[in-house]
Image (cartoon, rainbow, N blue to C red; front, side, top):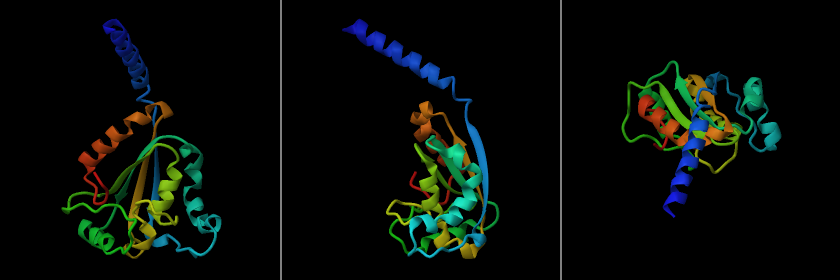
Length: 183
């Protein structure tokens, strides 16, 4: 029994070493978003028509995201943390992401997240173009008047490394201290 357990651990270690050798294989993409330019669609239309504006925004990167694990974070290039936080706090929706209990005035990070599969659906929800019950920032519904200049950083990893996403997400949270999010 002990020898079998030792072999299982050796096999697991070998698989881990093989996966860790792929850590350098990630892609980094940046998407600039001006919240003032986000167009508010007619939410009574079909989702296909509703998301045309969103599709135009992410079209250059769409193929890179398909079914790949990602870590992503939104940075704001201009704006005050308190003003941003207060505007988000006043958003009257049940499906918004958690707001940090204490305000970090030194951060320029708005949100850190992860997606094991298709990030497209998460981005639709975060930007506010998706009618959903999942928690998301819903930028379209509160950030437009703030005229935020956002930079969305997306790190795409090989499928075999999706088990590392919680570690990366926690590390990004610890280092960037975003205004919005659950960790």
